[in-house]
Image (cartoon, rainbow, N blue to C red; front, top):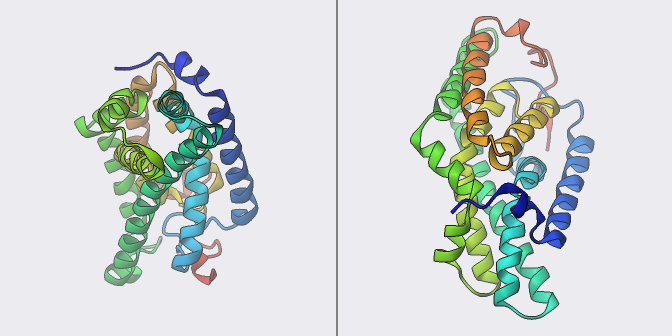
Length: 265
């Protein structure tokens, strides 16, 4: 069942304000920590600990604004099933924590894949060799995924998660975390292609992060979200071809002379 977007936004105002506050703090931290670090496609991800901290922070910044309606709905339902102000505050926080755990797991998988590509591909992935073709191909693949049945199914869940809450509700804090992980899994299924595109244009690029955050918000929250997803598919395919053919002409695509994050701790 898909609830009208305005209704979902009005529900759970305290939870909505809290989530937006966390997202704002995450954006501030991201701006402070990552300014000037974008090295374009193929940016080194640095050490695992540093990367994981940045990944969770940037994921919270990009994804939490679009998750506000879902957290608000969860807060409304938990209000009716629990008593006490503490539970009404803690349970939505646990749900958000589970949501970020799901994205953290995806980030770890992406880190592992990046390390494998470095070992296998070596210099072949450099910008003056096969790098633009690999980056462009990844972005084209992300665009094609936008049109897949799995993308549509996950997007519909993210836009109307009531069935998940009705059929998979679990009591208590651990139940809230588990429910957050499950919803986060649908969100990963919906947006992993967009994240793949972010890796293709520069995973540390503040400009492309902002673009992705706007796309995710439009897809999940706006009434025309599913149409937006289809338009984004066309845009990604065109961008991928452009990067493969003439990367120097793509705006906000950093040149290979930019500093590498390989020097990060």
